[in-house]
Length: 438
Ligand SMILES: Nc1ncnc2c1ncn2[C@@H]1O[C@H](COP(=O)(O)OP(=O)(O)OP(=O)(O)O)[C@@H](O)[C@H]1O
Ligand SMILES: [Mg+2]
Image (cartoon, rainbow, N blue to C red; front, side, top):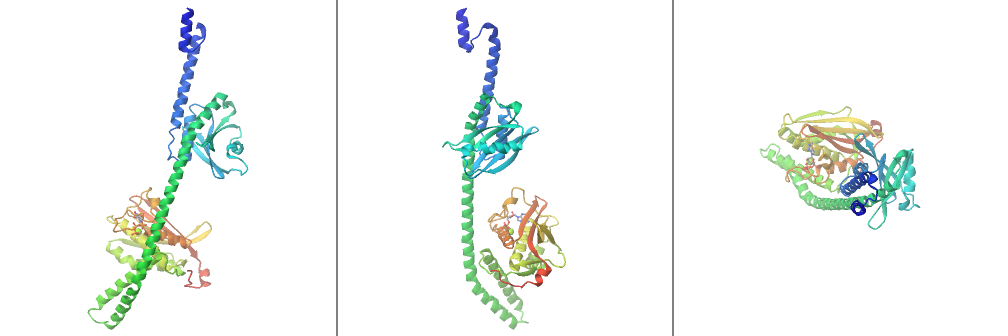
């Protein structure tokens, strides 16, 4: 009998009399289940997605922790330089909601004591709660953040829970550190890509300026001579041919000017310009192309014409870009239309002269919309689009203190809005026209 008791004790690890044997066994099973749950959660916490945003990560950790620890709110705090961001997750029905709290790390306080600043900040938000924080440490044993449980009084952790929380922090720390490294690398790749892009732009700009310069002199001869010849051969049957040569020369000149504008090497002649004139000029240049494509053009320009101070030629270039983009988006559509409307708008205490170019074309999907203003972004055939139209247009709008933005719905059409600081009539009278702003 004695022997049997000993064997039982060895097998189960339970030293008890027969009477309490089952109670202890149940307790042991419960303990093991609890440990298993904790292990499963720790395992889940090592699988934090490195590409997730920090609020998403905070809500993920909170949703896992809630299975094994008692708390009302959870915060993931990360320290970056002299500031910290706390991603506070709170339960919202079935799911979680996250708010971000940003603060400065006092210069005299070492990061491993930041909880002295964090806890009063949390106490202000959740007055009746107790904060339990554990630091997140890097492989080099440096504190780079905290995990915090905010517990109502009745939820206060027992020391065993606090120990578990520390253990969890060491596992979560590895995943979070990976996330931080991933962000650093992505940021670096992004900056490198931008550098390559701007180097490309600079090279193209230089090339364009060189080519434009070379072409300018022969073109001046072509334009001048063809004009002289035209005058002489007024009634001749060859006059229309000569006129053609002249018009093509004018077009080439415009292209060269565009190239120079793009490379920012031409003179920016700023003057007081009526927006209507710009629209008319742009339509004069591309209107023919649009009408042969069978488009209806609707024009609603407010009267008296809105004035702005800027480069007539550059703003015209924006309108042309928008019109040509609209034309491309309208290929093969039923009842293709482009609507041009001018309006005034107050934004952030400033008055703007606005112009919308709306089409009922193919539209732009929501994931492509943020990219369209990037240089070289084009969905068009290589021979058709360089992807520079909108980025150059945005650059011009911003150089005028204005804005250019797009709204679009796939298959419904797009609206591009250009806003330029409005020049009031009174201001115009006091202003010198054609002043060179360099
Ligand atoms: N009105 C529009 N409707 C639908 N998509 C548009 C519209 N305007 C621009 N886009 C999209 O934005 C992209 C970028 O336009 P952007 O004018 O910068 O370049 P592009 O037209 O492709 O080339 P480029 O203007 O140099 O000839 C286009 O390729 C197209 O996908
Ligand atoms: Mg374009």
